[in-house]
Image (cartoon, rainbow, N blue to C red; front, side, top):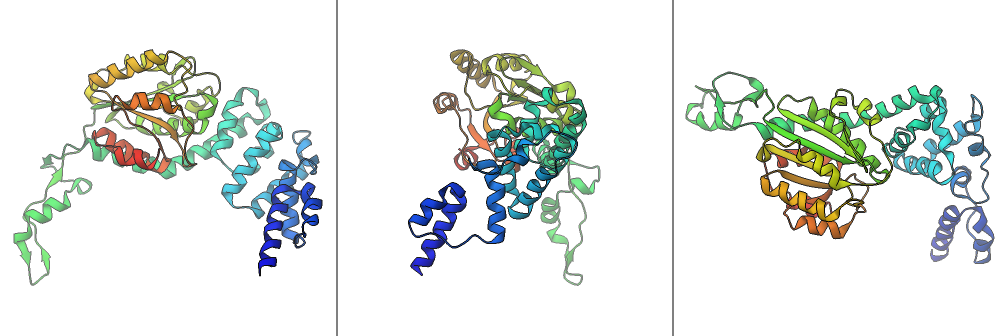
Length: 389
């Protein structure tokens, strides 16, 4: 049994290290021969990770209207690996092997699995995409946007309605606004043993949230290259919130410059194309701009989506954040919007900001509705901070 386990481990190392490690592995006992599927997997991986792998299909990407070898390679990936693994390998293919050109062929974009990391790279390279592939690139981004919307849009809208509900009862009937708990409690005396049900004399309804903007939400998003995925989630979230009349939403993006993208909120793809991924970071400058958008501090929630690697005035940033917090603005620093594990961020600056009682943590996309509801209600985020640092 031990020998079998040892051979299995060696086989795993052979698949990890590639064909170049075969002689070394044979010298220490060798492993079982690779199966047909494992050989296919090894070949697909070698084109990206192997120094001596056959990369002809990769090198031919983008030369001509048809790339059958590359199409086969993409097909092999999807048949051999789980969707998450396909996304990782696609991203590595683009980043490690100079395969950015495969993004520039329309048929290749159609063949790629919609993946937010690839989408972020596309947006970073959007000015380099040739005309023949621009429509396909936008369609690829739209698929990502549609997927995010399916996952969080309804929950985000419900969280806003819930948070802004004044919990006052209205005489105007509305099934969607029925307060079931209070209605049952107030009518318990009208329980009918014969019918085994409550016969309510009166129904109680929540007053709907105001149709006019009663709160302001500012989304201030770092558009440096390292924040690409977070910028996509933040932008889609901004468009969802901008569609709600009960909120006044501002969507800002920054690197060393500040871009107010609020006017593009009617179409998230247009908004994302207004994001200029890459470049440096001047958080202080963006916070200064956002300060001018605050009309009623106590009714304003500001999300700053950044890894806090400040290239501008750190002391100025701390001063502005302190002043905004003291004025009543509810500020939340999102170090990342991602479910990929612990984010990379400036821990020193995060600690200093936390001294102002400003939460700093990463948030998985699926938790955004809960975060928004709590933020609008000014509830504690300590448990979310603990779970997502």
